[in-house]
Image (cartoon, rainbow, N blue to C red):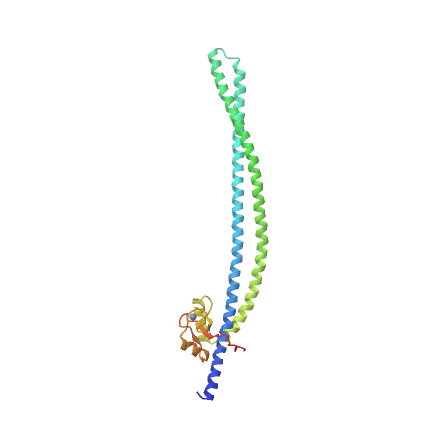
Length: 257
Ligand SMILES: [Zn+2]
């Protein structure tokens, strides 16, 4: 290789480095865009979690309110029953004195006994329902508190998340503009290959090769290829992962004596 050839080759090498630089800049932007997109997705998910917590708090409260309504209905029924039976007892008691035979008296006395027992049971049930009602009321108050708290959290987080999303959107706009400029600096054919690799390889399409190892897939590239890469005039690809590669050997600092 004569001097002229060497100069041309160096120039071409630096041209191919420039192309890679443009790709790397694009890659850096794409990674930031991907990170922002992930963040943007994460926040509404958090909101969904709080919304579902609120829905289950509402479910608990509705359940307690349903039981309160059942309790009130049952109490009304027992009170009506009690009223009817008490009337019966009063009527029968006044009739007892009019009865002629001991047999008739005994029969009515037995009926009275049963009616009084029914009343005692109804009173017991009413007391039990009243106690249950008090307990359910307390549960309802607690459940209302939980629901109100979830509501507060939801509206607070909703405002926060909206602010965050607005911020992300603004950042995204800037990044998209930069990306538009960055893609303009990349050759069309390279760009489409870059997009393809990026999608297949987790967003990383341009990687360095350090001491013969591709930093994208950690595989060694053939030594001859590693040599060529140091002065390459064309953009090269890793034979294992197909990513664009460039030489990234650390600059050897001569050992000082
Ligand atoms: Zn590789």
